[in-house]
Length: 328
Image (cartoon, rainbow, N blue to C red; front, side, top):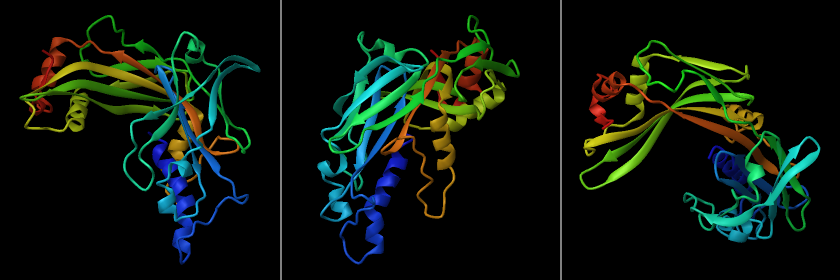
């Protein structure tokens, strides 16, 4: 998700750049050796049962860039093969080949929306070691006629919550309510997440909303944040849009989420916030013999059990009562 706009920007430069500088629609090859350049994107999320890696290419074509973008064989490497490996120091621990599969079509635009090919790895007893541990992860891609493409990143274990103790129901108005946690990732974020269901006259639709309360650019091993009850009510009010057609909203979970992020992904996010004069963005890549990003993030979720006073405040308080939130 975070990489989608970045990858599109790269391809737009390769495809459309020459169009704006020439008087015809001929596609001028940008790479000095006239070869396709692999573009890889993947965020390891080992808490999920399916991992996704995307590989496309900055392509050449005989038609205009806009026409070539709609041709499947101009966007993908049909014969590419991808492997994921876990390493402990200089020893390989586990290895599995990813399977090429179609996923939900991309948003409409200049590029082909379907088929939308990804390489996926689904958790199984055979590859279970790949989904556990904190070692280094290597990605390799074999593409006929091109050099071996590879990258590596580190994945981190789940965060530990030290405060508050979740064995008791929480009073959100113990001002302030202190949260403390630890993670081994070099960058961390702390979110609140509210899961609820909009109940209409003839249907019900599940939703979730979250907002970030804290982020750190340097791992101190122990993160902390203090939250005031009134501020929490305001956050809920801001993040849920009022809809008169909703009879009521049934709240299923109030959670806190700690996200540990690898250095590569943090660097990408930082650079993407700075827009240079060419409006494209600064390149951030850790792919050898290609471009793109292979990185990781670990999401740890904790359910909060809140007391009756806190529930009443969310349902009937001055900031949130117009949202018709219900816990029962």
